[in-house]
Length: 337
Image (cartoon, rainbow, N blue to C red):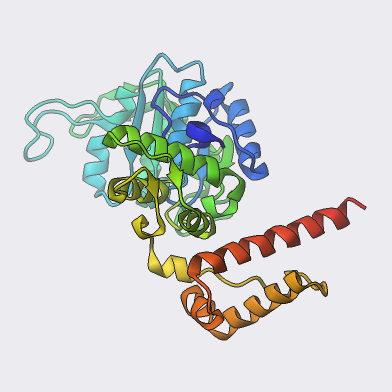
């Protein structure tokens, strides 16, 4: 994805046409999403926390025939069955203590539109059975009432769990088949290095506008650090890190000292395995092998490795990036023969 169209910083009215990516896995996800948007089948979106599942779900809705109708989002995690009943299907006055009036649930509110159920795999078995009935027949009862209610809803679900068609103690197989007319997998940010530079630029621009600052970019050390970082929190973490850096930067350039990163994730980046190291006899190849060996000796801790090598952390990150790029070019060259 590029710029503001990289999946972070998109406006609520964005459609799938506002997305683009240079990553093959993300391109495949977006192409499948465009096909799904033209149907009325239920969609299941898989991906790590913070990867952009909600953004994608909203864009699918905005690209569908239901775009003029409501998009209702609901996070299903960590709610009791009674609260889930009330939230999803509504309740009548007097249904429970504090229920002073009739309230419509998410299914009713999403009538003729899209209901997005985030973290659907965290639903209890009881809640799963009720969701199955509502999705399958379009009918349900409000809490405290036996009267059937109906709603025409397109369901988009999401989870960070690896759901599949095999029976599981966690999730009903029949519900899985009912919600997965299309299954989309959003790749984690660490697997999309080609999108990272554009994502950072877009988020810097957005954060600068929000904070009333003029940030023109990153210095070399900060750029190297961010491009080598693993981003365990994906797009959500990227937005937080960039906004903090923009706020901390006193001038118009973000430096390495302005970056607030997860130290554990920053240091847990594994060295490249020996099988993918450049085996050439050039000085560059020898340097890469030496760096890999030092990283292995210190258990992959890049701060310690930088100290052992007598270089800055930013220089070590840059050398690692150069090594991975060279190995990738060599592989591509061999495959093209």
